[in-house]
Amino acid sequence: MKKFLVIGNPIEHSLSPTLHNYWIKKNNLNAVYNKKKLDISDLENLIEQVKQKRIDGINVTVPFKNSIIPFLDKLSEEAKTTQSVNTIYLKDKMVIGHNTDIEGFELAIKNINYDVNGKKVLLLGAGGVSPSIIVALNNMKAKKIFLSNRTLAKAENLKKIFNEIEIIKWGVLPDFDMIINATSLGLNSEDTIGINYNKVGSGKLFYDVIYNPSETNFLKSGKKIGNQTENGKKMFIYQAQASFKIWNDLVPEIDNDVMELLN
Ligand code: ATR
Image (cartoon, helix red, strand yellow):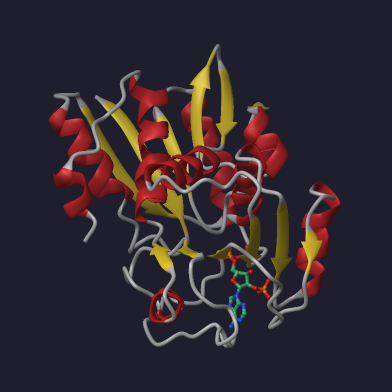
């Protein structure tokens, strides 16, 4: 039986097992997908288990997407650029780290037929997922990426990798077509980002990486003033689909049941 895992800390709320086990069953695979809460000191041993073929694949979530890197044999281009790994597998006796968050975000945006080409984007947050979103936005030919983060130094670190981005002071809103919440603000339903959207106007896209709750205060505010909104559910599903494809060599279907599973 193949064994897959998602690791993180905390991990209780991860919906990856629900989604992957649904696809495993649907495709009659002899496999199981579990979640495991780890400490950083457990990472080395875990990767050793991949090498010994006792674990067939791992998804990595907060806070290990970067700290797992020293234990891996090789990174994909996507993982290298973002310094962020969410998918691990063994190939030619080497433990490979890959990033499917980039693909997840791109497919989610394409799924709603939003054309990023030539658009000005304001990205809120410089945490774990932000480099993946920047790469995806560049792939889709965004004209301008503004980055705003409460802690300026973290935004500046990202600018060292992505020199094309422009850093904006936290709380300041430049003119944009699309605004993305990539902070953890909103995970608690009472969270507010504390930005005043009164002058933003309508006809823009408000995108939240968070999908639980399905409508954060950020999305509610955007909607109220006449903007399109989208949460991170499809991004989550597409990044999982890309991992599943790597491990099992088949593309699992995203049907209505899959969309319902995560509600
Ligand atoms: P990490 O920062 O460890 O990478 P993350 O969950 O990937 O963790 O990122 C959290 C993001 O949410 C960061 O951009 C963080 O901003 P800081 O870099 O200033 O910490 C942002 N964030 C979390 N709580 C916040 C708050 N109360 N106000 C503004 N931004 C917040």
